[in-house]
Amino acid sequence: MRIVAALGGNALLQRGEHPDAAVQSRHVHDAARSLAELVTAGHEVVITHGNGPQIGLLAQESETDPALTAPYPLDVLGAQTQGMIGTLLVRELMGRLPGRAVTALVTHTEVDPDDPAFHRPGKFIGGQLTDRQARMMQIERGWATARDGERMRRVVPSPQPKAIVEVAAIRALLATGTVVVAAGGGGIPVTRDPNSDLVRGVEAVVDKDLTAALLARRLDADALLILTDVTHVFTGYGTTRPRPLVAVTPRQLRALDLPEGSMRPKAEAAAGFVEQTGRIAAIGPLDNALGILLGTTGTTVRAAVTGAGTAPGALPAGPPSARHAADTRTTV
Image 1 (cartoon, rainbow, N blue to C red):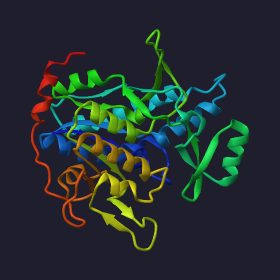
Image 2 (image 1 turned 45 degrees about the vertical axis):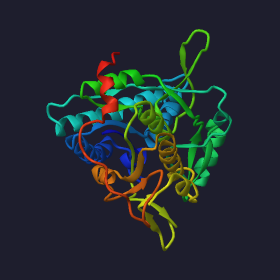
Image 3 (image 1 turned 30 degrees about the horizontal axis):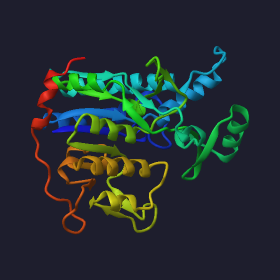
């Protein structure tokens, strides 16, 4: 099977943790074990990842650097996070998959310059702020901020992804048996000039789950796995009686009251992929990707669910389906 697996940025750097390289390396080490199990089970794997905490840290460093006359734009900082997280993932995966080609590809995501998100910032980046810190950042740096749980965080525009610029290159790499890390942080956001066809970076961060769903559709993937720091999608999450959901339809998933800044985009991405392809998506724990695929953990999203609260039979392991055979003829 061909699988797109999306890692949450908060799963690589969890709430309250120091954003040190050693901390992130430890989480990547755990994630690589889980991802390598998918590959050794015979699946083609494309890995995407979030970058909210990481790009927020780089943005803060850039804005306070006295050597700069102006801070680096978010699209360039997004490229930096692709390189940072990409190299950590590639090195860990190479160690767990000896003899297997693994590469990280700098990836751009095309967005609409007229997307209304540019006028309504809503994507969380960076660490948590107190109310006082948030007010100071609004005054001193012009940040937009919003409440994320008990604290405040910076929010930036998050336009809808329209196209993955390097999708043909990703297909070509898959055809050679390469494990690909691509579209990190939702991809580097760009717009395309309709007259010159030139691409230009824009000040935004694309949601990585929506980009992962788009990438999975463009690659004709059999499954989209969204790996995060919870075991399931829950009803009543944060209450005294949360209930894990094992199997849901897209309609059931969309009907849930889920947090806009965290689980809601994951649910939307999973539901959209299933609706548009008829294949499966699943949301579950970062440390058990194979279990999510097999239905032993996580929340599976299917066009139709049989039974009450139990997932249908697991999908088979093995090589990619026949519809991917044509990819071997793809060239960069």
